[in-house]
Length: 316
Image 1 (cartoon, rainbow, N blue to C red):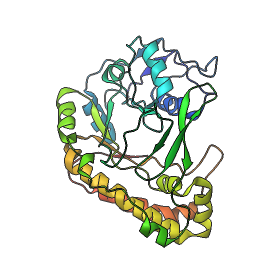
Image 2: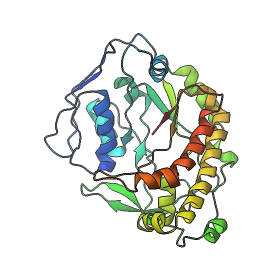
Image 3: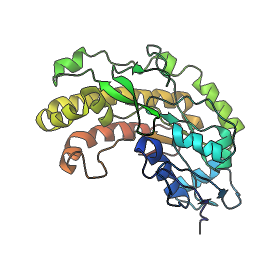
Image 4: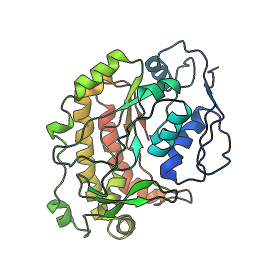
C-alpha cells in the first residue's frame, strides 16, 4: 500500500478569498491532513512528516503517472503570494522577494519545495518581446492579448489584479480577423529556456512540470468580457467557435514549440486549467461544452500527446 504523507497542524484560510487560500488548500487536501482554522486567514504549520523516501521525486512521479505503485504519494502544492509568505514564515525559511504573475501565482523556491517534501518543480517558457514586464508594483497592466488589468484591494487589505477592460467588443468574424494577435513563434519566448531546463534536470531530483500554452475557453472569456462572452455562447456560437479556434492555434503553437526546446526534460505537462463551473453549478450546459468547446480542446491536447519528446502528461 502506498504510504500517505501527513501535514500536521496546518490551518488555511477557508473563509478567505479563493485567490489567497483556495488553490493552496485544495492541494493540501489531496496531499495531507487539514485542521479547521480558528480564524479566516490563519496559517500554522507545526510539523510536516512523510515516510522515508526510497525514490527520487522524478522516479516517484513517473511511477504514479504510469499507474505503478511508488514509495509514497507524490506531493505538489501551488501558491498565491499570501499563503506562500505565511508558509515560509511558519517553516522558518528566510523572507523571499516574490515575483507573482498577474493572477498572484508564485513559484515556490527550492528550499520550500524541499521542506514540504514536494515532488514537482514548475517551469515554463518566457513572455514575448512585445510585452511590458509585469510587476505587482504596477497599478495597471495590459497583457499581450490586450486585456487590461487594474489593481484592487482585497477585504484583508492585500492587493490583487482584476480585469478592467477587454478588447473584443463586437461578436463578429471581422473583429477576429482584424485583431492584433500574439506571435507564438516570437524567439523571446524560448531564448535560453533549454539551458535552464537542462540545468534543473541535471542538478535537482524533481519532476519538472511545465505549463507552456495557456487556457482557450478562459482566454476567450477575458477577450470578450465574461458577461458578454456567456451571452455570445448562446446567441453567437459561430463567433465563439471561431474565436476559440484562433486562440487554440496560438496556444498549440506555443505548446509544440516549447516542447521542441524543453520536452526531453519534462515529466509532466499541464494542459490549460479551464474553469467551466462555479461552486454553484456549470457555466455552460454539457451539450454546449460537447458541441462548441470539446472538439477544440481535443485538437490541442491530441497534438501535444502525440509529440515524441516526452513521456507523461496531466490535463487540468
